[in-house]
Length: 555
Ligand SMILES: Nc1nc2c(ncn2[C@@H]2O[C@H](COP(=O)(O)OP(=O)(O)OP(=O)(O)O)[C@@H](O)[C@H]2O)c(=O)[nH]1
Image (cartoon, rainbow, N blue to C red; front, side, top):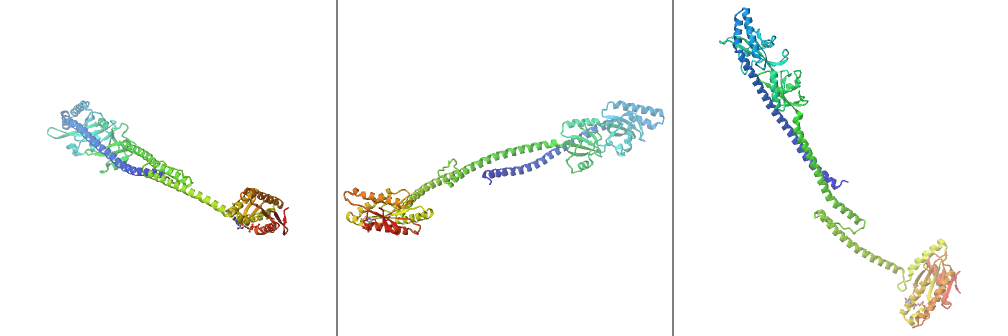
């Protein structure tokens, strides 16, 4: 059986858990989305910053290279190389250009190599002995060479330059004479490490790593030192991140095991800016919030459980007392009283229970008194039903029952018993002489003599009028005669007690012994009566016994 207390606790837990869990889930989902949105916004801002940084850096270098392309040593060197076929002049001019290039390259931190190309796209001067810029020159768009603009930067795609052991950008500018005639080209290989340093500086003030990828998804530059050019983004992830509406995605990152990142294409070059953050870090805020919420829920559940237990106890404890009190009443113990401490319904119930118990106790006392009265009256009735009203001896019907019982016992165990039939001599005369009241007194006195003369196992009864019967159990005829004689003698002595009205009281007694042939009490009574008759006939004041069909004198 589930107790009320456990039901209250269960209800309280459900009532707490359901809304908490529902609100918690809702909040988690919302917060997860908010946290992801916030991270995405930050990543967007970072890509914008990187994009601007990239553009600024490129513009600075483009300006520097453009200035070199307009420098006189370059223009004149190309003019001489183009006009004269004299090899010594050409060599001298190229040597001057090379010296010039060497002199300026020392002042330009971001430039690894400078080279001058003629109109046939043959390199004629270089700051290094084996420049690589010529390779890129072949693929360079003609429009870029002719009219470099902001929208069409004269920059080659970023590339890892084995020769310089660096990743480089190649910038190529047309060299024009004063009259705007194309004389050749000036190429510069930009050291992207300088850009990488700036990326790392930017990284210090942001939460995400900055990675520049080429169009195949390979790492070109990165703010993370541990990433080298062998690293590449998974093609599927790269493809997904490049989709226009992709926004941020969570994926197996290049820098972090699980990263949230987004890709932004740099419009003016075939490179992609990838920014990624540690997703675990992004989730810390969300995890903190979740843990705080769970702690709150646990505290709430503990408090609600404690309160529910208290409530349950407050309800169940009085009920248990009521049950115990009711059980006492069921067991018949009515002296119970409940202490009423509460003013609520349970307090009212306890007070009414006390009232009910008081009423029950009172009624029980009344019933017990009535029962006692009835019991006493029953006892009296029972006594009256078996006794004679005047003498207090057993009456005739009780005598019948006694004789039936004695006959049965005699037939069972063969132990003798005797019946004495006693009659007061000339009682009519006594009545007439002394009056009925005195006659009654004599009847009572004789009864007292009879009772005093017999044992506790014997019975004395008034048979009617002045006739009495005595049943002597476990007694043979001889002992019965002795008892009868003793009774007769004691009664004879009573005349002294009536000195005011002296009267001689004598008794005639007939005795019969129980026999196996006796079927009913009257069989035995008849024999005692016959013996009594003989005692009367023989002169009264004597004892006669019935023996073998005739009465005999006891003497
Ligand atoms: N005082 C009184 N007398 C009673 C009572 N019952 C019967 N009697 C009287 O007892 C008398 C019995 O008389 P009997 O037994 O017939 O005759 P007796 O005078 O005793 O003569 P014997 O028996 O032959 O000696 C009657 O007069 C009855 O009225 C009683 O309860 N009280």
